[in-house]
Length: 251
Length: 306
Image (cartoon, rainbow over all chains, first blue to last red; front, side, top):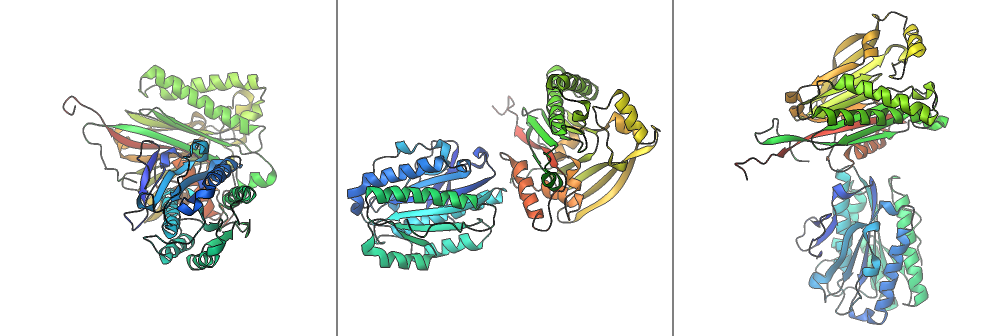
């Protein structure tokens, strides 16, 4: 659920066809550019991530800080969500789609890992919100594309949505004129035991699966760099009619 | 976008929003020339203006000249608005005089030549009591009413040699001589068209203007009652008439097909429109610019309603 709206530059939206999945986004009249890449990072804060929660938070911060240095930073809108069954409705939105200049990642709260994994809900929320907001932008003559990262250490075991619902949202993004292009990436961290399930999710949902390896400092630093470079690449492909062809297949 | 009623209700007044955009044309881009069009717009809510200027492509640094003209015109309108308290009665003469004064001061300060100042100027100036549009040179003015119908007027000079407000003295005489020397000769044509996206656009009339009339500038008065019927009004440089594979009337209609009036609505519309046009051609051949005023209404608090 989005946080209580106290920021007058933001508004709440619902993913089409659902009541439970809401998101927040910058109001159109507060947007300064004419084209945007909508970036979503969904971070697993289930109990099994407890041992590297701080490192995961630092990775998120590093990725955001790196995106801020991109020459395309004025054309990026970022949404960050956490997911775990311990959270209300399984999803907590740290912030909705906001210009990078308005985000202070150092103020992201410390993660409190607990609960089981609503992975499909996280992917559905990330992709669905991207599609819904992109449609709103495109309907008002903005140009928009999107990229979604779902960072997890395990397979789904607690979602209200299904793999096929995620697949339908990914397909909606790729076939319609609601968004120029959409890339979805599942990033497995410490997830070797669940690689077969995550690869199956990749195949069915139409997303990419990247194995980021163990949750070491070095690997997590590379993950931050991967996120930043992928965002930059997708942003540079805006206006070409298709997704970036330069997203790395490995970290 | 919300539906706008056809008339204003009692207790409502007009509120204006503006936006503008300009872009380099294919010919200038491939020739390594800068964009010589410029556009500006401003609104205080109750008063608004929209201005475009198109620099002569064979002049000097007319990219700078067109900017001096738009900013000079904007300042002249500001000065008039402050002094006149919303009345447009003296606007044309007052703005022309102040415009010439500002341009005359800026040219030597910036070290510009007379050739750098050769640029057209079209502006629209709206207040609560109505509006005026002034055309010096060539270009298009168009408005969309609350029914969605668009009225457009294109001003075209013979020999593609428009009048520039900076002409004076020997330059003005040379311009007159270029057009045959007879001030009563017809050298400017106004083509009027009407229609909608659904029904298409047709030319309905044309008006002849003498050389003298073109030099004096073409004025159009917008009454308060007409203004209440207008949803969007735009002034365009003649670049809108030179889009590869696109008739000028269709181009104007496309650029007035606003989905919203929030933020940089005109900029987004033109960028999107040009992108679509480039799918079937090269897009704008010449530099293109427009400035738009959106007329909306807001409730006025009366003693009864408080």
